[in-house]
Picture 1 (tube, rainbow, N blue to C red):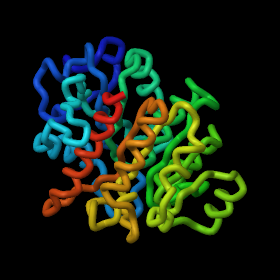
Picture 2 (cartoon, rainbow, N blue to C red; picture 1 turned 90 degrees about the horizontal axis):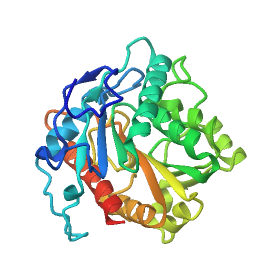
Picture 3 (spheres, helix red, strand yellow; picture 1 turned 90 degrees about the vertical axis):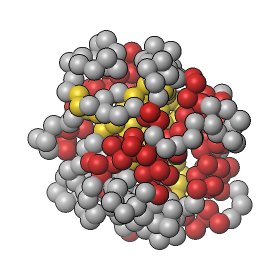
Length: 303
């Protein structure tokens, strides 16, 4: 068992992982850490480009080159402590079993995490239902799920499984109606009808060009928020390294405008960043994703 795994979690199947930002032992210790990074290199239901299982390792590798000083915050957020857990190795017995396993692990992690911000690094998007529903179980109607994404991911099932990456938000919707989606620009007619019927607040990607979209996304959020951030929210010119790229996405500054407002105006209880599919000739995608994770931690510690 790694020394980085807190007591109470030593029964899980862990694999070695690098330290986020390459922090030394003091700044990455569990005790006193404000944030926890949990790599989840799971991939089973990807439907076009593959490679999301390599996403967490690529993020951790790129993070070694992220500058620790944040000029916007005039601070070094890492000084609040960032503990990187070893990667969790999920079962290959099928996506439903894997999500159930992750749900069990995440519940155990929350029991010992206290007020630490846990950020999961995917892996494909199907993993997000586990931490999201763990928080639904804890906070109920006081929690909103903020989905930042190109795709609505509201299919009842896809490729003969309801636990597909394309169905993850439907699995979350089964548990809570409190979903706000931002950046959507790819969906089926059935998903569109579901959004209308269930009154899911959705800020479509074309709205990002007009004033007031951040306020429209933040205003309906409940006091507590869990963020699931699929990197295909970004236009492919920002992050080309993802399995299902869609033109017309958000840019870096729009992502920060949204995150800055959410962390300032709500209590963000946890997050995941998913669907990075690294390519050998693309350094920008993992670097941008690593810096996005660090910005989330920065906004969290700034509170």
